[in-house]
Image (cartoon, rainbow, N blue to C red; front, side, top):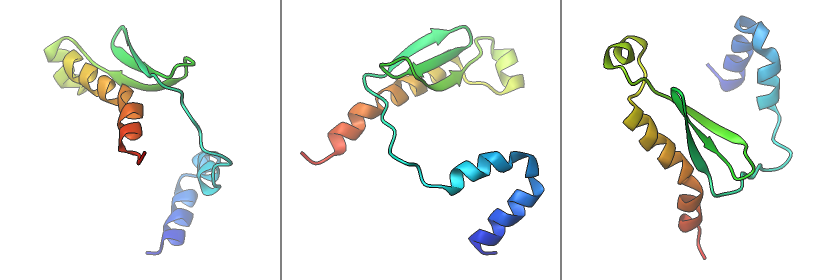
Length: 100
């Protein structure tokens, strides 16, 4: 099935999501920049990665209780912290990978 055909079929089956798909059909007018450094905040049950201006970029949810964690399929606090730290480090990784 061709890409255009798949998109058309998806739009018909998910008609209530049409406004979402319309956004992705158009190119972004300009690239967005999230100023570094990115910081990680620990809220109750999740870590939030924020850009310097306070823009929230990612939420990583966790559960401390192992029994509940296995039932609702969430990360442990340590796993969530490591993922949040890796996301917060992305600006430095990209900057170091760019040629000087």
